[in-house]
Image (tube, rainbow, N blue to C red; front, side, top):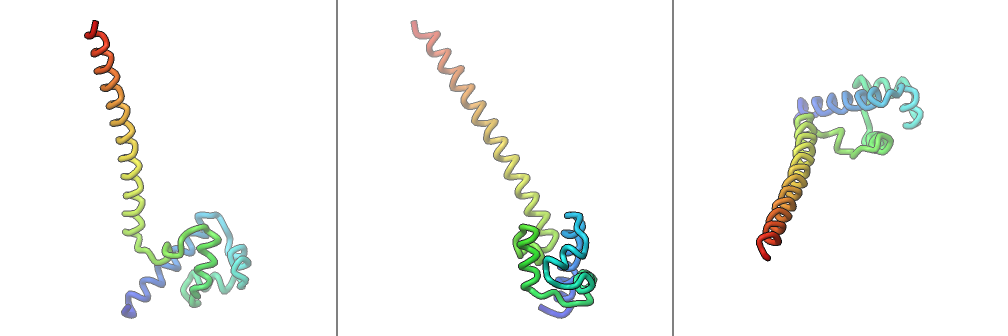
Length: 118
């Protein structure tokens, strides 16, 4: 990985750290306490002034109940993953509709056979 990509990856990780903390309505102190570091150190991690060690990312992934790869996935990949899940749900719903219609057709055909046989 070249230097530019490395910096972009670090920036993405920092942004995700902040997003996770804010979306869970947590303050820096509570996350810092969980990681057993000072709030200042955590702030510096989010701002890019301090290196983020991998073991801390693992602890944070555990804390937020997410997979560690979340920190390294590109947003376009995350977007595609969400879109895939949504499409799979739509397909499942359509499958249920098709099954229901097939059952109705079978019922109609069966009832006509019964009526036509004296």
